[in-house]
Length: 333
Image 1 (spheres, one colour):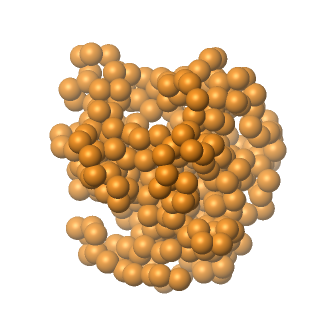
Image 2: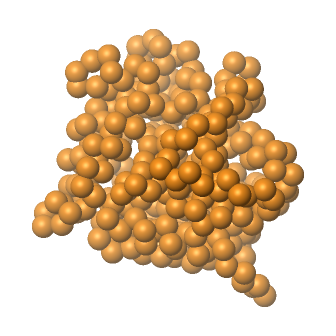
């Protein structure tokens, strides 16, 4: 197992480790980033977090882009959490399936949700063993919410709490992320062009102030750096697997749940923003009402935010809501 520690944050009190851990498939390793306070020497289930990314961008891109000098991972580590962030195979620093080196039309969509669940299971197993704990918290976004929700539904005993940001659930028609047509193994994402789609979800008057100054450029640079082939052309393209898109098409957009939300029995927090086009508020309400057996459940709606709220001006509202939810001691009858 490769492991190294390096200082990639301005905060000298935060330890950063990039780990390559085995998946359940020979030749496929998973990148797991860990951030924690240097003084943290004892670990507990309640203060351990595993983060799971969405359908297009890696965990580093979503959770460790230091907008305003502090990323979401930095924030959580600074609040005393032992924070891990996973890249599923095909994303970020994890092994890319060999099919991604061939033209996308040569293969069927790669890395469907069930593979994501298996990779998440590998990460959970690794962390529990390394920290000598029996459970941890999951924080996930968008498609990652499908992965984390499905995993939790079958493994409640390994999860303390589940916090989901804009989790995928039933949609009324095709998802904006699905351009239609036949899906190949992966798609080439023109990252620098994403600003327009990102901002278009917000009212015109709000667009200029939605992303912190310099934030898009920093985020795009980090996103492109996760794909070693991204700098090969102009504009630079980042590869993203299409398995999640096929699952969105065949399940959520078709009105079929990919897993049973009522099987989740741990406390659940849903965080959603009002301008989210990818996961409309009606979808979040439907999901909230489907969590019939959660120990307790909460829904926080953030004004003036899109699907990418974790990288926007109101991101600290989401950070605070999740940190408070994870830290509270609440006994539910």
